[in-house]
Amino acid sequence: MKNARLFKLILNTMLLSLSVAHAGENGILIKAEDLKLEPFRDAKAVGQLTEGDAVDILNKDGGWLQVKSSKGVGWVRMLSIRKGDISKSSGSNIGSLVALASGRAGTGKVVATTGVRGLNEEKLKAAKFNGKAVSLVESYVTSPEEAQLFANQSKLVTHEVEYLQEIGVDK
Image (cartoon, rainbow, N blue to C red; front, side):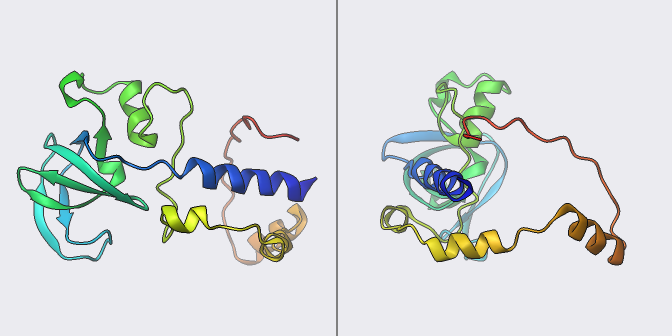
């Protein structure tokens, strides 16, 4: 049951991360950002975009969007762009946050996919279930007692964090 739940979670994450920016989609920069030659943090900057700059989205690769603006063509981190009709921009509101986090305004299903590193659409489509990898991940599970012992030996400080409610996950 635990493997099936983990497999469902991984599969759903992979399927939801297949959203691709389509040519003709536009957006607006929510913060100043370097325009990169390639979709990598350490890539050469070919320009500078400022907050409020309008862009046309040309392509998507992982957490990066290839954009065209009056300042040139290049790559920008996805979370620096609010997608959608920029003529309807009305400042900061929850709809803007949903669009920012997921690129899907108004669906009610917030999906954040920018944490996928090194995976593009083709790799995700070609993904296959790997039971050995799931078993390996599950082998890292530790008991609360073992975790507490490790924390005490490492002199780690306890911080209480409230758990988020699980949504749509079979128990």
